Image (cartoon, rainbow, N blue to C red; front, side, top):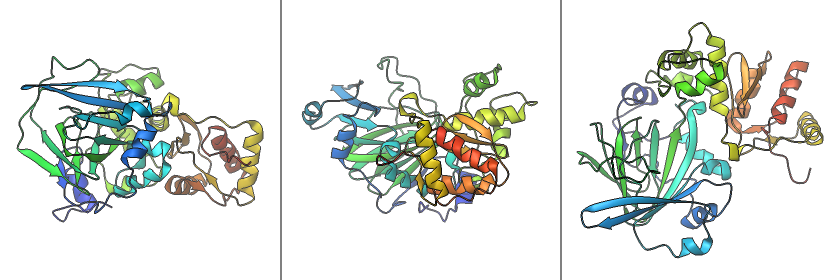
Length: 377
């Protein structure tokens, strides 16, 4: 877990900082492990199913412009990039390299349904994506090299001259200014303007959160809302809600309150929230196994074999439903402990299926593409 300054505990971090106030945490990680190299990031950027971007910094006197290119990229092109003023960003790294999910364990006091992705960037000296703000919480974990971060809670105007594919702010001065080295972590709540620039070639690991908009949930409910662009907020989050895979009742109530959703449809809101929390991006959705593969996986599990959660898959549950990859099924009696183990370990080992309902739930999870299908099956 992160080593937080000022004798902060997870409880006090949530009370004082979560969705309220930024926090710089020097040497919070010691060393970033697991880690990824520049060459590995470059390899990911050549793959068709990986979301990758290059952001170039064009400087002309006092004027700075940012421009982007989207991947996949040719190896030769990446090898010919200039020595400075560019950044390579790779999204959803933990889905392509499941071992990288271990970085999520650094913040175990945040419910895991709130995690969106691990974005990893390599920046040449002078590289960055420009001043901007996000609608979600982020933990910026510094790997090798040095990156300067400045941020402010002051209102910063949009940059009218920015490229249409980058939502940038005007450059700003800030009293909050840190040079982050290996192991330093910067936590930023939503809507805080920030601006990172590589002082030396560096790798940064960004743990980004998932927060539905009112429109996301209202669409699933076939309902309307007063502010479709409002984002889910949980500044009153408590550490006891961070149970593996569980979406708490408080989360549903927050969704109703912060997104102005129908108060007389609490169960429907809970289901919509669970489907949103586990919905994969279209190009990352695992393939559903064939009926034959489903039968083989179920038989393998029944005989005590392990099933490993697919790197692209999302799973969660609440008091009424299990959720896998944007779909849901009623939660049988006794299923919560089984699902909690799967969510915590990303593995199903020796399932105890004491009822037909539990066996049917396992078959349903297999059919949703939750588990890997071994090549030698």
